[in-house]
Image (cartoon, rainbow, N blue to C red; front, side):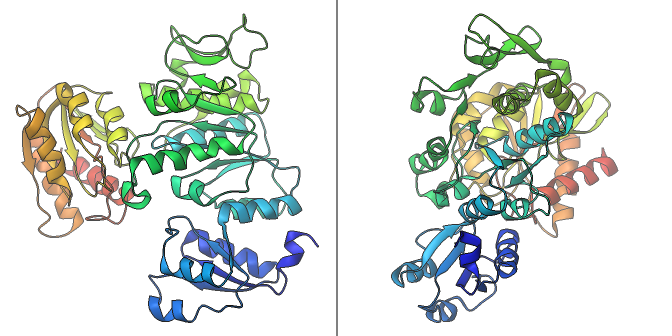
Length: 449
């Protein structure tokens, strides 16, 4: 029997009742499995753990669940097989869509933008494929499409990679690595190892040469490197205002134009880097340069990613609420000058010293909110005492907080300044999500600025 046939009548447990867990549960039931769900937010956790049956044969674990969670420890003690959603989808794919090929990417920042660039290139080239994983559909939903897709482009978080052991990829891209999710992984080194694990499950590795962690740790001579510099043979890079391919062009001496900088929106450095990674992934599966150019030109970033909200009285108001860690905030700040920086929230164990040191000469003033705002304040006071700090407290709701923030920013801003929401932190201490944070910022700017 194949894996799908083996699921019929099998006692299964889905760990996590979020988007991924619900998609897995639906798939299991459709294949005839006897499946229940466990989620610590919806049950009396200890009672449910005590009731976990020794008869459970397979447990599918949603990303974000720590391997040391009591429920997972109990399942291991019972001899239950644990599997990630990615590996579950891979096993299903082998039966339902054996011809289907997977490519993937990961990184601390730029994942969603880059994978959506890949999807835009798929559309331009009429490729029967889509982006999934940490964006859009779950992987199991994409695998179970009525008509099997030829390609899936997976955006993978460190949590998903940590749990995945079976999936194999045609190519993978590693965008960058900086401190994030240290509270979950336990240390920066463990976080790095989780990201780099992806390189062990692919035919081809594409990596950002400008990222020190990647360039120091990846040594295989077959790696396709990309950067914003002039590309050596076997690399992707920039020459004048052109994205250039010297990796997939046929010979060491040849080079092909992929796109112009003007085709990339916005054409700020970190987004051009994203475009190079997306182009390399597309080239790795045989998509022509002309379709890549069309796909990149057609692509527009999602909201709350370096989004210009308003330009009035020579003051720019930019929403980069998606900048939820220091690395993302650095890229955002360094794309602007005379910045009034709105920052703070949940730092997730990240440090802020490098951010402040690299960006101090771009910062005119800082407006701080959120639980870990003093972490940022301390870094500024330690190394950039000349930067004015304003703290805004949440006295009522999230909307009122952002109104107060924008009022403070308006009072500080002068012609030539940029007011930038790039918090360097997660949002859940004061907002439902980074989306709500960005939406409330935009609403306040349009009403007050």
